[in-house]
Image (cartoon, rainbow, N blue to C red; front, side):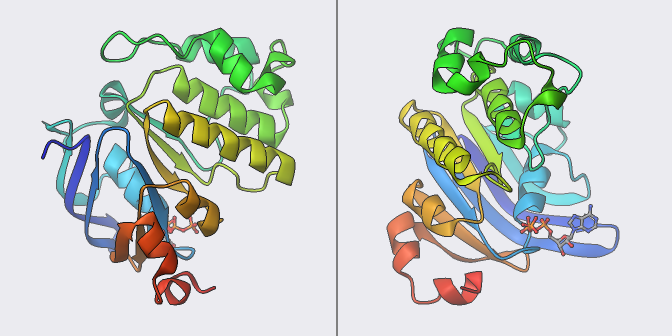
Amino acid sequence: MNHLLDARDIHAWYGSSHVLHGIDLHIQSKETIGLLGKNGMGKSTLIRTLLGHVTQREGHIAIRGVDAMQMQPYQVARLGVAYVPEGRGIFGNLTVKENLLMAARPGRHGEVDWTFDRVLSTFPRLAERLTNLGDQLSGGEQQMLSISRALMTHPELLILDEATEGLAPLIVAEIWRVIKEIRSSGIATLIVDRDWRKVLQHSDRALVLQKGQVVLQGDAKEVFNHPDLSKYLGI
Ligand SMILES: Nc1ncnc2c1ncn2[C@@H]1O[C@H](COP(=O)(O)OP(=O)(O)OP(=O)(O)O)[C@@H](O)[C@H]1O
């Protein structure tokens, strides 16, 4: 089968510390995958390894059949993978408008549907802040800007790492609403979030990591009802 992302037997290290121990992850076009696990189990490391930020790695990574093992993060981004990192990643000294416009580029098939106007109607709060600098935004607005920037690159796969971390409940609800909208727009998504219920509710499939290995995976509903889930998540 031709996967959008096909990662096999992924190992990663920080110095001499072996953190990922042979992970397989496949993502199909338009599919939403939830990635769960307690703190420190390797979720962010897996994402950063797939993107090429963690370079001490072994295994096989293909994006739409293209070998990505030797690629730099910017090359992975060009293949249509957008990353909204934990802690955001916007330009604090540029305005909201500048942040958005500089991110914009057509998709691989010339898609331009995530226009400036569509992004602003998706996140009306940003429309009120267009001339504010990135640094002047609240945490929630920065997160919305970060997601908006990712959407304006017209990705085929969007990776969200702790997108709701530290945000007020109303903003969290707004972000989940947008995640749902992104899912129905046909962009494949990989979601990491502490709210495992919400993750499973919004995903097609899910994987649970423990100490750098996949210990549980399946349809989101199966994972939700699995008797070992509470043990793996410490809940
Ligand atoms: N830059 C780094 N240098 C050394 N060790 C690291 C680094 N980043 C993470 N680790 C270690 O790698 C392991 C996996 O961490 P990782 O951040 O991937 O986990 P996580 O599941 O994303 O958890 P969290 O939700 O806390 O970020 C942990 O033992 C962590 O201490």
